[in-house]
Length: 604
Ligand code: ADP
Ligand code: MG
Image (cartoon, rainbow, N blue to C red; front, side, top):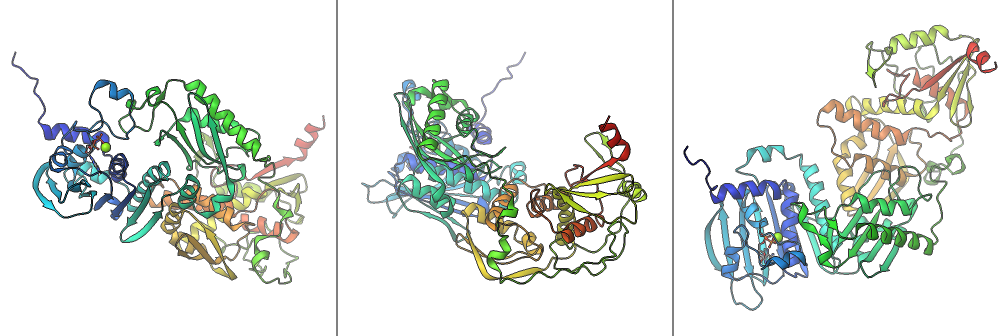
């Protein structure tokens, strides 16, 4: 048999390696920034164009490279960071594989300019098609600049696989933040399409966190410090009230390297036990310093998952350090997280001139007759869109067969006693509709969630909602990343009645939806931001559905809110104008039916 095994040509090997190292623009950002940190830079600037699809450049003032090293740096397995096997077990740098630059050069055009501090002239290399096209002397400041253009120009599959500009840019910001948070003593800048997104001066950890997360996190930060033989824990945790229902601001650094560790996350989460509402996740920024010999960072190519020698001990130390800090700073349980908001002044009353309430009630109104709107004040918080025609159709959820809206509604309407229009609220969360031989019980939040959902869907697809102007624009602080999300969804937010301007890291809100009922605008924005902070479905229908759900939920009246009688009537009225009144957009039941028979059975 003929020999069939061959050595792969260098450029093919590089491209294969690139597949592991360079998945998207943010992978390039990570590698270039980490190289700059390894080169002991005190100032690092990241420049990104078109979310990195067009250009990524990192400029540092680190040690630089001489002519030979600059050329070598682009070779695979060329590194200045380890020399012998033992070095592998005591790594203090981010890189050590000598693969990153070679991999990047295999899938992009690269320009490298670099100059060591003790040399007169620097060197400039242009690398295209995985080959050095030119190398020339150049007059530059000491340090290194690496510019990466036309990423994946020769790997169309990868290029096509990239997500929208906004999604890629979010990954880029995430990556920038991880490196910047791990090194507060280094100055960082990030510039995107000409605009400066971040300028983070060298400083302390707290300043860095605030620089990235926005000013409002400051008062929630709780310092943490623990020194043991095997581990030093330093950084900040946050007070329980800052916890969010979505992940996003959980940072562990092992020897200043961002890592992911579900196991250690559990140690932190567990320490908050009893202090957090269900499913809330605290934000934290914890740097773990330990003997480099006791961690194995070599198990994953992109190196965010690592293995510790003393995993259990580390878990216990982190858990007790967090508990200790929470105790020391007298963080109290927040049992009232989902507090009953009828006790608060409504948000609108804080910011609007007080007007006497005016509600016109139609005494003849029967919510169950499908009729035209009979002149109920449009300004009522629950007024909704025009009557919509029902569309027949079955749907199935969780294997359960549902009746179509028509069928369910006919069934429901047939059973209603037309004379009866008593609707009352029970336990500030249910609306009770007594009938001759049965009672309908509605969940007010679910019902309103359905109403809002259909309204919002209409606002974003057919016609925009009206907006009420605020007398005093409200200013809210957000992080760069949050601002990015808000501007991504700008059009949608405007179509439902928000009007705002972005100004640096402040959002100036001067208009809100005319039926807006949320007590705290900042909490509302936090809720929607964490919901929108996901890769949204690409299909327009699914995308709109997702956005409408996301916005509808926090805008819907909460369980626990007291409703005026007229509001309760309006809500029921609006519900039965919906296309699918029996179910929430996520398929839960909106109402329950109790027959006289059911009640008799209960009394047996
Ligand atoms: P690694 O970081 O794993 O060593 P890279 O491919 O990322 O491998 O870089 C190769 C080498 O090029 C590094 O070991 C370093 O010597 C040099 N180098 C890369 N970037 C810089 C930089 N910004 N400043 C100085 N030297 C650099
Ligand atoms: Mg490197």
